[in-house]
Image (cartoon, rainbow, N blue to C red):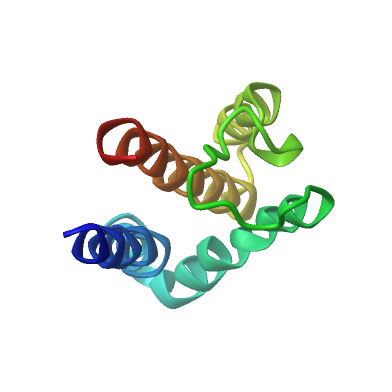
Length: 114
């Protein structure tokens, strides 16, 4: 059962990282949805902050509030970025916030099934 739950968590996590931004881009940025989707997926670069901790990956660690680019201060900046009138900054903000939402759902997963 644990293996099934782990695989399900991975499928949900990576679907939220790749498919969900595509749906958001298709709905809200229709004219240039592919560019919007690529920008949102590119915001996964914030996961570079995982490289500064040991171990780099811990399936039972909640990223939110632990890694610098996943901190509540950083999330506040991502939220404020949404209100910048530049469309590309807005798209980056959406991508970053979707990323944080995805990692937050992992935190919930860990607390329920961990």
